[in-house]
Image (cartoon, rainbow, N blue to C red; front, top):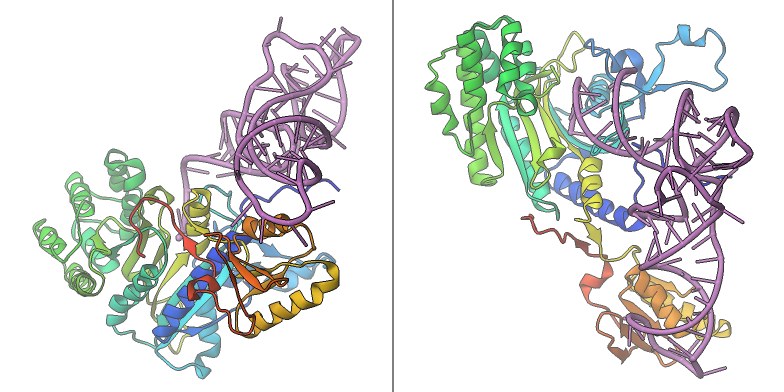
Length: 446
RNA sequence: GUGGGUGUAGCUCAGCUGGUAGAGCACCGGGUUGUGAUCCCGGUUGUCGCGGGUUCGAGCCCCGUCACUCACCCCA
């Protein structure tokens, strides 16, 4: 059989990269649980009508089909598709289990999602998302829109990643403003403003005209979009535009509260940016997009917002707020750039050398003693010359090699070799797990 | 889905107007009868993406196809 070529858009990491990924996932789990978020996993498939509701027909969903499906089977059921995000499955889960859940319900969910789009740099067809959401029944207190992004920023701060900056806007603010300057359909304006970074104001202006805005109205929207600030000062600049509207006032007030809290609890990491739009139309309040220092061209690596109508069963509605971290997008870019590696490609801390095959048993005994004290240990695969055995460890980044013959242990980094007893020798605490190295020059969190 | 670019060794690539496939790195063995580097010597590695066509002859030209990649779209 010919060598298979990798499938584009379905990333698979090397062992060392997987070690980095697991470190990231462990850290996210730790921080999320520190804040009391419960872990959840939902099935990979949803009924097609669930995935495609809200008229988002252009969603590229992978459809699930039995190889031996009978003719006509397809017509009888709604059909199944792989989920393309974790929010829709979560909303479905909440509706289905509302009677068994305690509200407000806080959960995190780290799973693969699938999108049938053309892959590109930073854009995959199968990728890992790490979501956290808070949902409540009927009404969700506003302060969750303040608290949730701070949890995510805390998680980023605990990770060896380039500096993350979260840019924040508010749908009420935008919608109130757009209506007040003459837009009948604020979502059209939103979509136009969303393209601002990519195509520039000259090309956005006609789109705003298409949305029904006068020249003055379009100018006002562009002026609004140009406002950004790392603190609450943006509000004065918005008011200086002279537009008044009750919804705009509410949105302004909310965004000020988000910025005030962030200034205190995550200074510099959260910025008000009134051109942040978000394509998805179900957001109703604060919206978030996050950019990675030095990799802004990648687009947002962590986005979300407040939603009111995503889950509703007719009797009750379940408003929520959540964000999703694009784990694969972040890691794929940093791996490719050589900006994030593990100090070794295996978990092994100690390689026990083998003198000859007759004495493999004593090497196994040394390894067992070390493992018994929590030290990840493997035994050399063959009784090759010691130079070979050392190289086996060196190639993998294993820091220590144990020689059972004279009961010594060698630190490959320094070359020092000392007598040691398997019953009590212990490596430095830091050697028990691989280090995560981020050799880039940009600012990092840790 | 639309439009560009690229497919040659494990990796990065060279290959002239069409004339029997190369380099560097990597890898393996030895120099070195049990301790990593360097050095020296030697060695392995290919359906030139795939299929067809033109030609005495195709890695090179033509057609098709597949894959990868970039942009649009959309978004993590």
